[in-house]
Length: 92
Image (cartoon, rainbow, N blue to C red; front, top):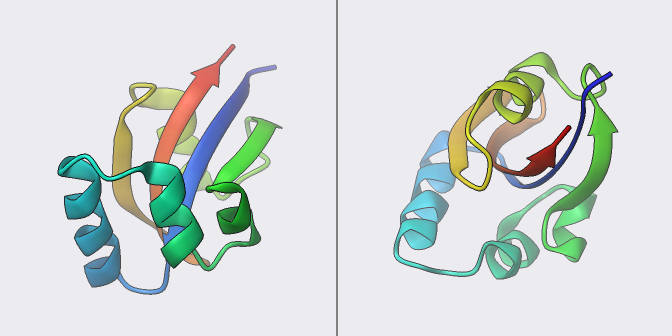
């Protein structure tokens, strides 16, 4: 069974996610932005979701974590929770 670890920033609108993505692209710290903007409880931990298995997260989120490049910010990714910016730390 595949396991991964990821950090994310969850916001309500795609526009806000795109604004934050611009800040990340300019070199801003992911963890600091997660603490400031994320509406997920993980935001307090810099967006850290810890380890999880394939299928534990919403499908669009899972697809990014288990199929896209690691250590790259992907998104905005829409789920029923809002818009995510996702960075997969590792998977195995």
